[in-house]
Length: 587
Image 1 (cartoon, rainbow, N blue to C red):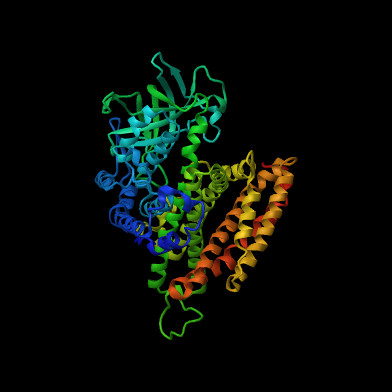
Image 2: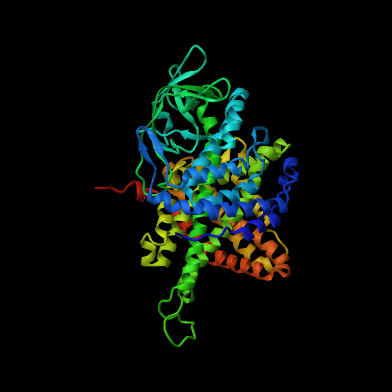
């Protein structure tokens, strides 16, 4: 089993030193969320992650959930851990106090999301989908439904799911066949089948609240005719208690490559009672509240798995002896593999990406809170635009990098990484779903380029690039070698953006073939921007914590010299067009 120590020092550094978004600091409800409180929360979060959740990773992988007589039984230890998890109030961390939550901002809960992703992503998914469903219900349901369902979900006694995918459709939801027939009492009878439903059924909670996309019988075809329905596993009685079983059953549990401890189910809806959430035929709008937040969280999953992969690779490299390093003065025997330049390069690649991603994610968490809670509508809209722009970047880049980092971790561990003994290969398998679910990374890239760069709110990418240009205009000479490099890549990204905007009008294939490259360039630049924020503090406060800040400066140095330059190859590759791709004749 891999070892894990929550990176509390880095997390607290970000909270204390990079919580410098002026608009975020104007939000009244978070002014009492101070450093001491956050430190206490994160220390307790680290304990439960390291001591309670981490052992579940192996348990879930070796003994996945089973379907017995129509009931899903979770992996050994899951029920006991979940009971402790909700007793300690961890599901309620970021939820509204009105429904029993603790009201912590995403600048805090994001760190806990990372810890859980590091220790057991499969276990995390049972509560993660509950929070996603909670957010959707909170923003779109009637007061009656919110008062009925949210308190039990916040408490963790009831859980949630999102039910979109069907055998006939994944991304193209306009093809869905699940139907909803209105009843005289205003409820609907939901009939159809949903597949790949994360946490679709289990024995951890007394009720499961499914959010289901379906088409009312009198609605038009395509995405314009889709509505969203709340369909509980058990009907909730007027007194708020669980009643009779609804028409929802589990057909099977998927046999998966990774996250085996998470029950991914085929669900059958047979005239199940459902309640419409939000306006009729606007179900996708409502569901995207859940999906967009979930996409950021999936990015954090990739970050969390990367962190534990790096930690174990570093430890192994310090213990494993193999070969002679060129710079060693040792005369006898083999050297530790950490003395080999290529292993050090691999470790620094992991570290520079992980710490840059964490800083970018912290920046995004502040923007998210501004978009939701600031009193000024213009400030909310600008922040919302930045969140919209960065959501596909975080989802795709963090998960793709997670694949790169877990692969490198296996390589550092050599043959031991390929066996199950140390648990490294499981990290690779568990992370492999993250570039796929919640919209594949290719879909994210297309969404970014075709829908997010320029919207009805204006030229979002132009606003973002101007923001970065302004923020890297720093007079401190110590940082200018970094800002000059980033400025060059910003100019390249501006050229890339102009190329996209020109081609999008007359050559969709050229743009489609360039989407993934564009997302990667934007992601690398955005991470470099986050590193500049870290460096600004590191140089300014250097004498207060020399070891910590020197580590930051040297890690950033690697990122700017070894990682950021990859952006140029993506740019040059993309602008070659698509003719040689589309004209190729496959046999």
